[in-house]
Length: 70
Image 1 (cartoon, one colour):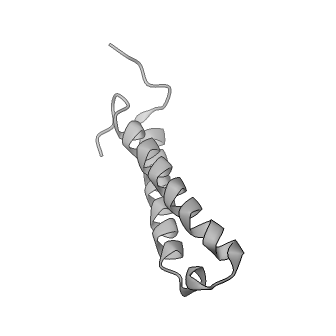
Image 2 (cartoon, one colour):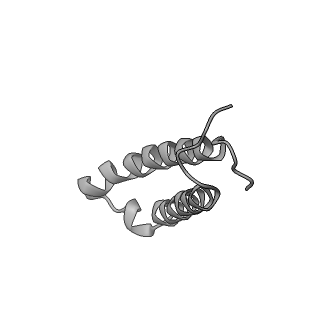
């Protein structure tokens, strides 16, 4: 039997915050500003997608913690 370092409430809050951050990144990725031709924006677009994938992996891992009921 494994013991989670987080209680049930902490696990739910962590998962919720990660999902909200992913949603914010989706909104950012859809921003017309990212379509601009400036080099700064070209570098930002792949970074947003990479961060989104990593946050999804964290959210999935948090969902696997023992005691997560969400």
